Image (cartoon, rainbow, N blue to C red):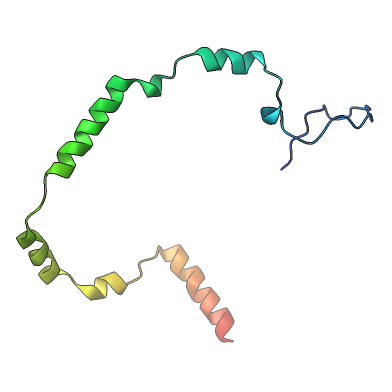
Length: 102
């Protein structure tokens, strides 16, 4: 969808306007100048340090090799190859297969 910066129904045929959205214009608006000076709450360094420490705690805890060997022994490969779809999706897949098999 294209955005036209001039109003719909404008009779100005000067050809000086383009179909470029206002976001790409060099003219600063009140909204953009106000929002640029406001601090962003997501950039608070204290909040980021909390998130980083949670990730660091999880990354530092390494599982032993025996855990992975046990998981490998219990792994059922047939479940990995099994495709699980919702009943509606499966019905549509069956319908499509029947259509192409005709």
